[in-house]
Picture (cartoon, rainbow, N blue to C red):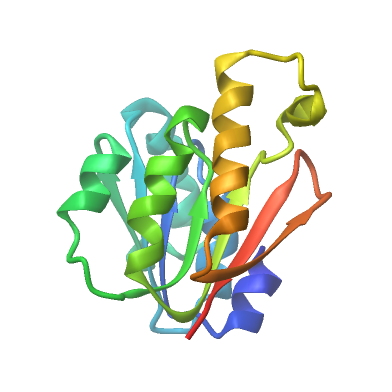
Length: 167
């Protein structure tokens, strides 16, 4: 992820779902020297671990944690284009709503990465009616049809969707 962020030339970013901070460190390391990353999460316990690792990595001054439901955090942001990179890895049922809020806030050429879009391979099992699987399917269908982005699903881990906002 660090390399992808570096390739994109990103300086501003948003992460939806922080957990213990591994991905936020990868993203922040890829941002330019004056880069800034906003991290959205609801869990103070897990993100306190993230904050310790941000300090150890020398990145705490470049990462801003916003505790609370990510959808509320996103909707409170200005609707103008402002981010060069976004990473979505939170509650799978919220992916579609996060996408709908993130894409308009991305700068032209901005990089959007979405984790776990294969749902352990369950998305191709037409008989699987698990709500999480259905939510990921719905997200995948919506994102693939979104004419504001160019998109690819990569077979990395549990599936990584990478999109670039068109100019």
